[in-house]
Amino acid sequence: MTFIPPGEKIAETKKCRLSGKEFIITDRDLEFYDKISPVFGGKKYAISSPTLCPDERHRRRMTFRNERKLYKRKCDKTGQDIISVYSPDKPCKVYNQKVWWSDGWSPMDYGKKIDFEKSFLEQFHTLMQCVPLIALINAKSENSDYTNYATENRNCYLSTGTMWSENILYSSRITQSQDIIDSYNIDASEQCYECIECAKMTRSAWCTNCYESDNLKFCTNCQSCYDCINCTNLSKKQFYINNIFV
Image: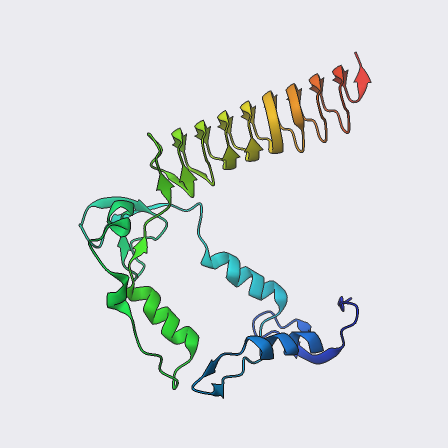
């Protein structure tokens, strides 16, 4: 069943040109496209309604951003070997971080006039291929070359979105933590393995949505708990297995 937001009416029913699935366009959608349609020289260039269903549009937005895949390639400015989120077969120019942030080149050199006979996306694609891109985002870190969207880390490897942390492996979204492996979205924690959405945890593994606890294994939604195994929705408990005191 297609969800129609309250107060909106179906204006169009379309078939996705990739998946073949039917999807709807509401009157509010058309109002939005009209509102954001650009005006150049007094002429409005209307943005048409989508030809892709919401799932395909979301998939395209996600594939545009690469966080976790890292490649070895050459810096197009210095010729040095660098680590980058752009593979060497891509036609774009890639500069290492130091060069990209330097005054050794000017982005103003790449300005182009708009050609109204061509589509915006076609021109944007051409611009993306000629303007130098930064290899990855990794600042003020030590022995953490294989990290991206990262800052002020030490001894981290193949991790993304990691900040102010140490000894992080194969993880993402880690902040102010140390000795974390195979985890996601962890804050102010130590010695955790395969944990998700946890904070202020120590010596724990295979936990989800746990907070301010120590030595938990296979626990979910536990807070201020200690020495528990396979427990759910507990608070201020110790020595519990399967939510039973032992």
